[in-house]
Image (tube, rainbow, N blue to C red):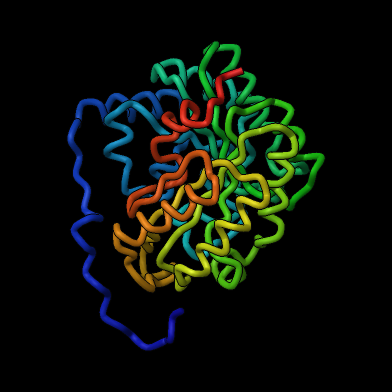
Length: 294
């Protein structure tokens, strides 16, 4: 935790350094995103993998604008009062998925607590639009908690995404500090409801916020007990000095050990490494779990 005493920042270790390999591929993805007037979490959240993913022609599209009604201490996405959303956004999303030639699309959104359903209908409309425009394309959605409202969650569940992702983000002890507008029990409830609805449930954790490896293992057990089939674990990297401070760099060996522990618990797909993010290599996960696009 931050102590109020100015401390020297640790140097970023070599395993967290990335470089852009394919500038042409990156520009193509960037142009498609801009052409369709879309936001991406890759850009808004300062994802370190944007070069790799955009060079491969993949991007995580962010629905409902780029302004979030919540203010989580780890997140680089702009917080404030959002603008009205475009009711035709789902069609533009589907067209972008088609233009990118994706076989597996990942959609997320800012939290929109200002909307009556928290944006659930926009997720559902976007899933259905992709199904119409791009038959056979798989869809993963990374959703806010929608305050655990089952009616709103069912709106998304009934659109049958191939993967329903909701991030726990951190261990139970740090939830209030890291996610002041969310909660550990509520997130587990969302995931349990998704699994009970017959969906493939997925979640993610960050390391480096002050947790211990023992607490991470406890969170993994809680996730597994609530029906989660896929898990991602990656290194927290503060966007700037106004966000939560970095408490540690977990080593690749620590990520490997936690990944092995998750596999022993029975998770069907595990991504655990410093640069892993929620949608990292998502296109590889459906084959690993036996799911297929509806």
